[in-house]
Image (cartoon, rainbow, N blue to C red; front, side, top):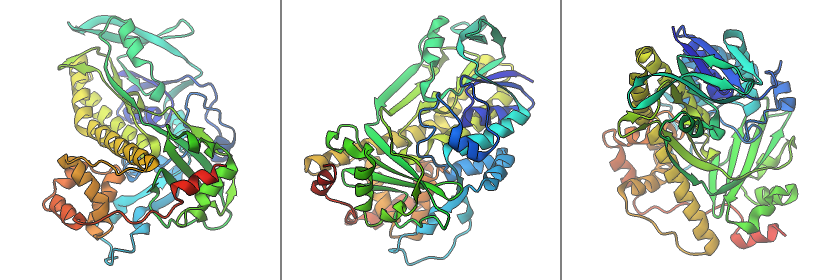
Length: 468
């Protein structure tokens, strides 16, 4: 049994702690925010103050890959989500009308998710963690303590230093502090090389509003994420007959920043024929903007050598991306499972653990990050071309060609549509899906000569008029 300190009491940190605790480890979770987990899902939504989570009341979605991890490793959490009326949703419910083959397939259940608003999802995981783990809220970590090195080239973390002056000893630190993680500074402060880090502004601003109904929630008439010329709309079902609608734009599009005004925001959504019905409910929030979203990845092994041992990073503390694809929690949960496997195999070998964690992260998680930023860059370029009124420059890189072809092919073939959903749902890595016999060839064949369908949304001129 190892003593493990998890930094961060969000969904990923608590889930990581729970999975590690169920392996027999002694787990302590440290969370900087003071407020305890509420007593109900309703309280979580209405009054839980999570200053440390910038996106706590933004749009949120649990992909099928997240549901799969919960049902396999934390089935009580999945059951609790159902008890708080989380939405069970499958994108097969919006199979494009262009696909005539509506017959079900074996394995279609995998494509169903169970999703809720972020405060509600965290409440569910938090109550379970409070029952099983030592969760300490209102505790701020300010750095690491080190001891004898297990690797000649890397300091070894043996504890965490708290703002109170206390030092908490540990066999392993798991950093799950999210986008605001200070890991590079803490690592450098104990004499280690600074971790490798790549970052870039995703280039988007989000404007989100939540709705509720006492009747049946809206039925999607378009993909949950729809690219509509110089903006996109994200419509996400949630728990207890609630949903969110997000309009997101380029952070360089000064003319559209008036979307924070509810009247302008509503005019834009109402002007989209396949999305206007999402306004048919009671607005339960104003328009919440979110900007400064960074795509960022870190690595604690450089040139095959750990920069530090005794600490690993999971979820957004390792890599964070544009949230519009809804991948953050799913990838964090997958990372939690991978971390538990590494700990089980290398508990007494700090250097081996660091290398194994890097290896499994590179194999299972990093491809998702690369795929996501590729989509971000492509969408940002398309938006900018629309704003400037110029043709979009298309690259001829084979991966980019297949990436453009996949959504065009998906609306023409039931099996390719399911392959598309596997990737979108964080169930199977893109390269694994596309390497199946005949899939890549079928995608390119179906997409040949096809053009994206006409955009059902206001023109750029009409959008600018709506901002007046």
